[in-house]
Length: 65
Image (tube, rainbow, N blue to C red; front, side, top):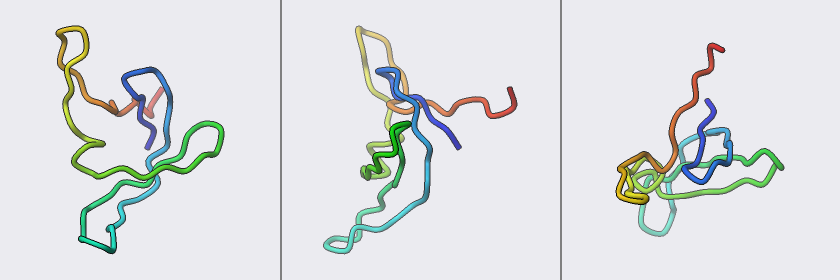
């Protein structure tokens, strides 16, 4: 599934993972340029505030279109 970061970048959600040191649930995702990133699952899915508006940090994109 693809997600759009609130700053505009498009990322592909690859899979869930677990951080070995403390068992934190993580998300593994890839940028359009091929760079692979990890982020705590809670942070990936959190709602943030930007210019007074609440929005998801990463919003799922419609795959049907």
